[in-house]
Amino acid sequence: MMRIMAGALGECVHVAGVTRFLSLAEQQGHATLFTGPATDIETFIEAARDFNPDIIGVSYRLTSENARPVLQEFWAIAQAAGLGERRFAFGGTPPVAAVARELGYFEALFDGSESPDAVARYLRGEQAGAQVDALPPQQLVARIHWKAPYPLLRHHFGIPAPTIEPTIEGIARIAESGTLDVISLGADQDAQQHLFRADLQDPKRRGAGGVPFRSAEDLERLYAASRQGNYPLLRSYSGTADLLRYAELLTQTLNNAWCATSLFWFNAMDGRGPLSLEESVREHIALMAWHGARDIPVEGNEPYHWGMRDAPDVISVAASYLYAYNAKKSGVRDYITTYMFESPPTLSNRMDLAKAWAQIQVAEAFADDTFHIWRQTRTGLLSYPVDPARARAHLAESVYLQMALRPALIHVVGYTEADHAATAEEVIESAAMTQQVTATALQGQPDMLADPVVQARATELVAEAQVLLDAIRRLGQDVEDPLADPGTLARAVQVGLLDAPQLGRNPFARGQIRTRAINGALVACDAAGHPLNEATRIQTLGLA
Image (cartoon, rainbow, N blue to C red; front, side):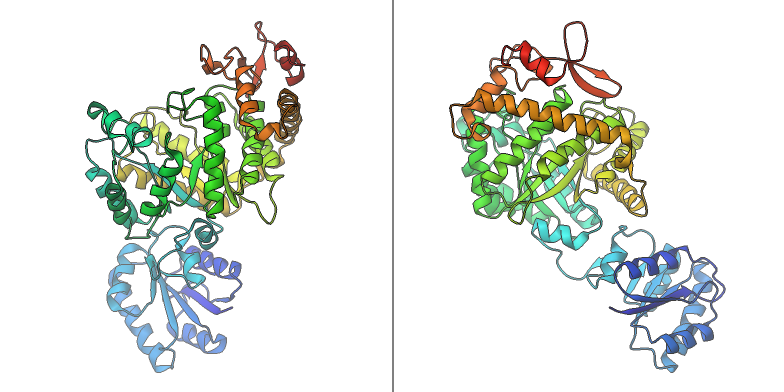
């Protein structure tokens, strides 16, 4: 614990920044003293002598012309009083902070341009001002703890272009900005599916949908670009073929921060890879086990893929259970469970929160000393307006809603999503907006989860999901563990227990479920539009 005093110097009466600084110091367990507004230099120095602080915080928010003589006089008197060996921090407007920086009296300067968590890191002794003194943690869990209570920010980035050069340049700019903790490489389709099969790569679609890396050397160059600024973690999409070989390459070249995978997707069913549905389930479980054996975190993106395809909320909740169950059984130690909001966009805020809260309840029931769960939230891919002004507003409102879950990570989805893949500058802007919203929420956001409507819907979803999971167990009653059996899970899709309207005419799925939005929730319904509970829906499949 340290002793920290701060106040507004001279004729400056602006103290909001000073009181926030001291409030953060108290949250870190430090003893504090506030000298007040417009503290004359002699009174300030006398308070320092009496309080005997480790850090002296000085604030001045008037003109830079006035600041210079005030700060020079303050420093001379502080030196004469024997305080010169103390640590000094300064807070003020950018022009005044520039003068303070030039004078060289202060170890840390804050002018409002730094990230909201910069002051907290300084008070923990990890960062001076906005400049990183030591390499931030390069492993995910350590970095989560390092930045808490602020969530880590992550964003996909990969410039669709014939070469990797624009992405290399963009990664460097993002890293130097210090706005992101994690850069997720957005690979083009051939990079995901045919990285090890040059004969199957199509030069005409090179760069379509993301960065066209094609070798270990490409990945190493992309990683090297991130070795500056705040040294963000790097990771990439998992492959959709040769999954274990792909995982080993990402680990060796990117120090891949974590693996993201699913159970039922990124295969022939959704056109993202060559594997059949059952093969995909089997390979993804093996991929979880590979990372679990190496103590590398795993992210489950399974549930929101059902929501993006208009599946009823209960199926997303059941998918959360299935993925957490298989991740734990596969030996995963750190599981990142992702909640995509506004998926589909017809969900109301209340029902969005209720669905996420139900998913949390079923997934986190598996948490223990060997299985840690880290919440990650994100804005819906399909929810953004095209208009940039409205899209910026949507990003802010979505992140504020997400903060009700107190996520450890936020997957920032750039406000340009409905129009184009974000440039480096747009990634930085979206991340800065997210920083502002998270800081506001952490100052005292109302508890939206306490809403009785949210709680009632979450309780209903958990109960309905168990009805669905019991039906899957009965489907595989002849195997030892139906919920971890690739054949049973694939059959659950084929017979329609797990189904989505957008799977119509899909050879791997039943694709006959109907859904509609009712009171902001997405529910299964019959041909006339009447809602169906799970027991009734399962009966209609002939599986009761």
